Image (cartoon, rainbow, N blue to C red):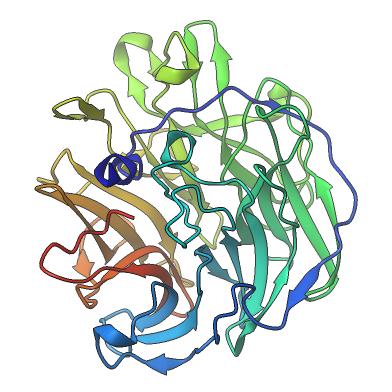
Length: 406
């Protein structure tokens, strides 16, 4: 059922236990002259109407909703988490290559994928906004395995997560690509992590890639009170001792005097996608909590809620809009280059239809404004290109029964 797959994006998923591991050496980059599915790669085109919308695309738009343009027709391979290297027109993205539901489109959310999330064969790519049909793969396609959720660092590197162990499906690590020249000359090294931090995901970095910088990421941890998945902070060059790690934030359960904990990994409600501001003084992330849930017949879910913390302060702040429905996920915040604003993505149920929208807000959660887009677009994963322009991925739906369920 398509609705079931869509609810996964609302926070209905579980996490399998994983073990962090060591690194590997350089990958050979590969460059596509055009997208590998044979699409014509039309880009930088004004949107003239619904017929001009591809099935899968990457778009740019002004923050007030004007100037919507198709940056690139992604053909049959979904591109997500598109982010820009500051001061350049280089973009990175996660590209999906497997199609479990056999509808001709390889996407992040697929009904027939394990748990509804389709990361098998996912890879990291880079391309230029000025020439988006020339795409360089930084990591190879490995059937059933993944690299995903890449972010640029301030020193021009790429940090991402990787899971491609040949025999252990519960093994993952964080890695960083260092370029001698963009896009094709680079090395990839694993970032050492304390062995107690299991299944590290969604990394982001502030500052240089040495001890002077920092990384944040969610990871499972087996506390004496049970399993939890907080946001952790480490030196950017990594560490092997838990003494060098600190907790940025987590769902708080007062009866546990801190982070919520569960008896099994499958029950964990945790954190995802922490993002430093550009000053490195604040972190936003999204998280689930047992006190915020919904029941739709046999379906039970805990939606994502936005959190923020000034690192000099001990407590995080809930940025959830007043009156937001329990069936609405507020997620994936990204900072504007001047740190004066955050753009984010919502997923909301209207009956059985899933609706997706983009909003921007002040860092304290006030001054929220929707970014108007055509109703046929199902937008996700926005980030800033400048203080007045964002880039985002989207897929298309049509008709009176239009739903953003993939």
